[in-house]
Amino acid sequence: VDEQVSDEAPARLTGAASWLITQTAVHASRLVADGFGAVGARGHHYRIMAAVAEFGPASQATLARHSGMYVSDVVATINELAKDDYVSRSPDPGDRRRNIVALTDAGRARLRDLDAQLARLQDELLAPLDADEREQLTLLLGRLLDHHAARARA
Amino acid sequence: VDEQVSDEAPARLTGAASWLITQTAVHASRLVADGFGAVGARGHHYRIMAAVAEFGPASQATLARHSGMYVSDVVATINELAKDDYVSRSPDPGDRRRNIVALTDAGRARLRDLDAQLARLQDELLAPLDADEREQLTLLLGRLLDHHAARARA
DNA sequence: CTAATTTCAGTCAAACTGACATAC
DNA sequence: CGTATGTCAGTTCGACTGAAATTA
Image 1 (cartoon, chains in turn brown, orange, green, blue):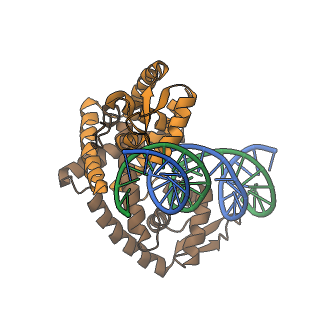
Image 2: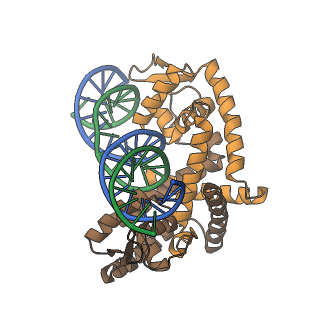
Image 3: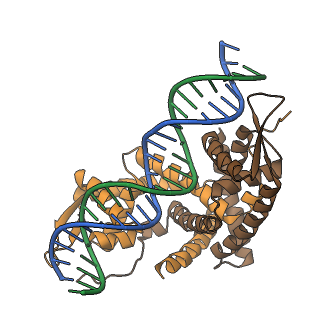
């Protein structure tokens, strides 16, 4: 009796976009967490370093906006990055409330390593899709994300 | 000085599928959590009830496999569902280790309500996409999920 | 003996909130 | 004055682990 070992999910779930997205995100998160974790990094580190690299040195509040993180999490993340000397945190002479966060040389090198690592992980994540399909998926998800990010701002 | 209010994310992130998937999942999760939360339900409840409805009464371990949940979380979820009398938990006469979990009449009605609720949420989630695009997205994500679910099993 | 099931008691990362001090 | 910034302390939810007791 009870010989099912199928692991099949109910159609109600497999047909729901929210299920597909959140479950795929579980795998994506684990992949990235493991890949970054293997070199002692975490997603938050990359997000902050990417924001500093692309938008230049900035205040922590600005980094929060560019990384989609909460200021409280930015504080903790920068604490960790600064401890390893990947970023510097210096007072803004023009506004004494602010810290200016900048990448150090070590930080730039670190970011390059993480870039390479992340590229490998993307390839693993998207393994079953060809180049065209990857492009499609990226476009569709980008539009969803833009839409909901804009709504969240309002 | 420092007049950026753009909220733009770095290209390193917006170009990474893992970022698009996990960030979209944040919005999807919040949407579902809020929508279900408004009627006192949570995602775990729906997952278990959907599995029981589609595969019939089953042991908790079987439900864990069909819902993609951990047995420990299944225990907690069934505690909650049973407290509201949406499911029954009765000992399996053929195997005294097992509980057989079944939907009650109230549970079937509850599931119908949540189905309707979830349909509305899917529409909100996919608002910016037309029917064709929704289909494309569902197919692509389904293939990704199948691939990684199969890998996780091995 | 090994393996499966249920249960409990946790950890963890990321998202998220609230409060406070300081400075604009 | 109200608003922005940085910091700290916390919650929540889902994913995930470990161990113990029971039974196949």
